[in-house]
Length: 99
Image (tube, rainbow, N blue to C red; front, top):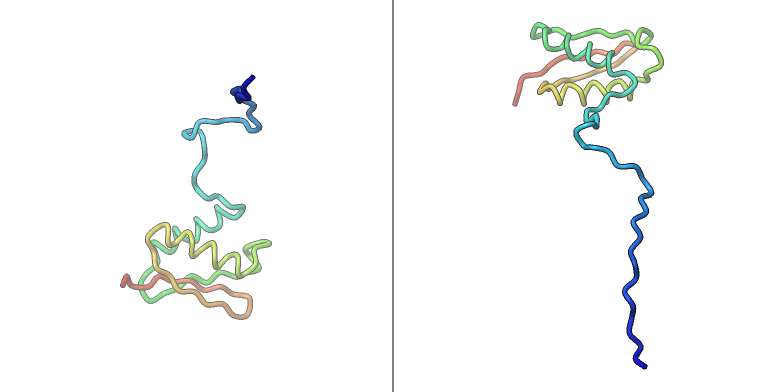
């Protein structure tokens, strides 16, 4: 009597549902997407030498670090280089020359 290993039957039990990749949303749309997109659109039409002045009280529950990060991400995605500064409850953002 030989000890041969019998091939085990592989069970195909899917733990997760499968979806088509074409049906997935691949862009980043955070909860403040509309706010950030509005800022980026205004940056695109901004005259050189001027900045957008955004009162932090007008942006809802978005904190300065989150707003700054989101605007930087969106601007970079749109091919813009920006600078920012904040003081006394106001956030300033402007475009810089390409390097």
